[in-house]
Amino acid sequence: MTLKEKKFLKNIFKKRDIEAKKYDHGLLLVIGGSEFYSGPPALSALSAFRAGVDMVRIIAPKRSANIIASFQPDLAAFPLEGNYLNKDNLPSVLSIIEGAKISAPKKTAIVIGGGLGRSPETQKVIIDLLSKIDIPCVIDADGIYALVKNKKVISGKPFLITPHSYEFYILTGKKVSNLSLKEKTKLVKEQADLLKTTILLKGSTDIIASFDSQKSLLFKGGTPFMTVGGTGDVLAGIAGALLARGIKPLNAGYASAIINGYAGKLAGKKFGESLMATDLIKEIPNVLKVLND
Image (cartoon, rainbow, N blue to C red; front, side):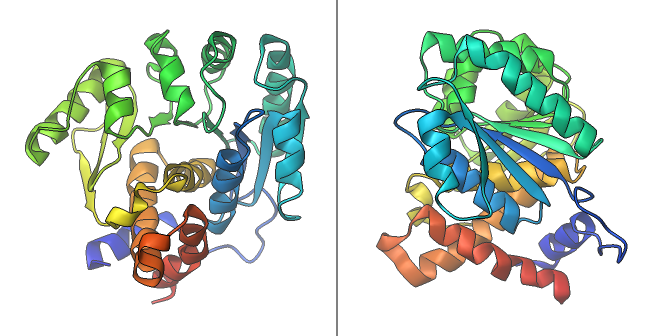
């Protein structure tokens, strides 16, 4: 890790006050999962814990929530009625969000999208939910597909969008695969300004740009083995943990890219072709050891 990256992380992770109490370092809500997918919200939640958030509450359809609750005792999962996120769930989700804001004032954030699916009803609920909140939020995976229906719901809010190259195309209509790094960086910044949001474009070099900053941040790291499913959910969880601590989306995006990338590099050295997303989560503490240097 470079000296610049170490210094950046140390500025993010301030020394904890000895009088610190629960929720001082964030409460994260992870909204995800469906009848078929239970892994994405669990991966985000576990990575968020490893990234230092005080508490994670998962909100998921009943089958997914029950499976997640059995993973390990750290995970608390609220079961929603039905096999997928539907319009009848919206009042319950909004109520949980309001309760979280009371428990952790100004230290609550959301991760939404992983494993939710792309049914028309679910996508409409995602849009309705995002239109009603203004707390920090990471929008990933299926949440990005939903945004195509109404991009205005993210405008000017403390949201972080985390697409890979194809999801970026889905969101913006712009292809980046054949562009130079300079051209990609310029395009990501243009789209962040246009949408009035913060974007973390995932790739061999992660590009983070925000409408409220003139600078774009780049992180080149990780490993080609991170193409395996679930590594994006890990990144989303790390980013969500940092947003919950009160870190601004641009800095949270950059810090999460650093942590996720170096965790992937460590896991890649150990496992190579056998790398799994859960291997990254186990390496997060080893990346954060730099805080003690």
